[in-house]
Length: 326
Image (spheres, helix red, strand yellow):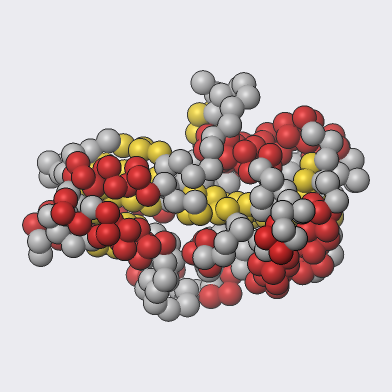
């Protein structure tokens, strides 16, 4: 099977859906003439023209609102935020318009819109450009929140998101756009709300999503050297969450560690821990452990960045804590 970059998988997903459905269009800062800030939309202006690949001013609130209005009138917009940090400027439209319109209109208006772009740390971009908002958006009824970890999942999930009749928050990572992975040539879709077991195991369950899944997989390799078999679950979406896959895994392994790039309070890992203690408490041989960012804004210094983010060493330590009850 061919190997393509994460950005290429996203581009293929959008292009295929735009060829299939003339109501789909892409709008955002630098998506057209510049071929995308991260070259995700490279070549799409040449194929689809300026009416369907649309450059916007630096006005997230304005073009997010334009997208919601377009969705209410039968189109299927893909709104690209250059980073989800900038979506804070548009959050009124995302939360108070896109997420709530179906309910507020008594089912008269679907909002088939995708808000996509990078989330989280991307190196030395400091506090205002390195935040994670997956749990923020997952908190809001009416939204679906997808966070893929690899090119294969990214393409299949984005195609599903574009066809969805509800608003979808689709979160990527600047540090993953060059990642390569196997992606088939033909058409395929991945349902939203179905987790994937990336690595079977017997001793401990490690749950993660997005680019931090790499940390979980690397930690599993280290643990294998010490005879500890970790099962790695990629949530893929954090609203809806596939709780059942996690519950069934914990019933088998009897231990759970959740690794997430986010601040600890009210995080996805806290939600997973609550659900497991409610639905698999009798199967647990140790308390649930979670690895998150430190509870502080991300600094600029690279040494401090590494100290704050989840890493392999912290994950291995957490697994040993649930294995040996340290």
